[in-house]
Amino acid sequence: MTETTTTETTDQPQQNELLAKISSLSLEPDSPPVLVPFTAADVELWRDFEEYKIQRKGWDAWRDEEWKTNHPPHIHELFSKDWPVLETPRLRIRLLRSSDSEDIFAVLSNPVAVKYYGQQPHKDLTHTRKQYVDVMIGRHSFRDAASFVITLKDADDDDKYIGHINAVQFDRAFKFAELAYIINPAYWGKGYGTEAVGRVVKFLLEEVKIHKIRAGFFAKNVASKRVLEKVGFKQEGYLRDNVLIDGEFEDEYLMALIASS
Image (tube, rainbow, N blue to C red; front, side, top):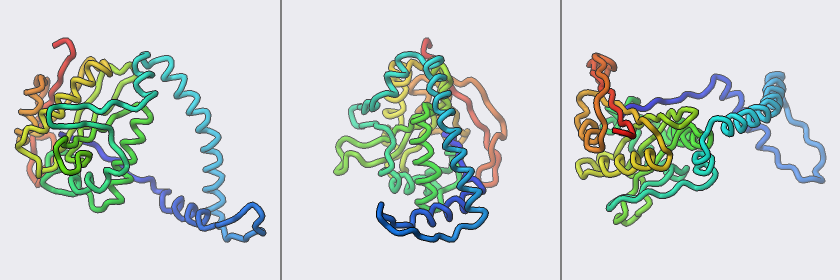
């Protein structure tokens, strides 16, 4: 399944340097004054940050009002509490946590696992933590996405990540969503993908009340095709030569499941 990535801003190194200077200070309420060498660029960044804090209050107020106006009551209730742990005969499916970072990196850094996932393999754990885990947790807090972690009930560590399913691109009325998923190759061929996707789809339709769920897969990814068809998705489109994988153009299928179908 395809998934998008994010990148850091060009100001990030400067911001990190300024943060390091401030974080290095260790002052008590009765400590004497301390001189810290700040450059003109540091001062400008600090002013930008203060302006951002002021503006963010307005953004937060606008967003809260937007949610009240456009989001259905059941969405307010759902996002005001911890989401339920979903269960199947063999799996528990919960929301993503920061502590999943290392297990996720092991999968997203594996070229075999990500070949048809629409991303390049991750190079280091920091990238996975900042550009995937933190981003997805943040998107959930802004009601834009939900990342479901798949775990095995009968494993020695029954809370260990073996894959994830992302529901993204929620619209304002929570009628549409897109689905993407990935499983650790060590657990391929056991039907876990179908079991997990089916349970998440059931939750999205019945609890989130999504009307239409979209998904896509590349033509050679026959395992994803079987998963989506088994849980009720129907083909809606076919894009020829839509992506380049290992130097070869690959077609992409567009699938969807509608609540009433």
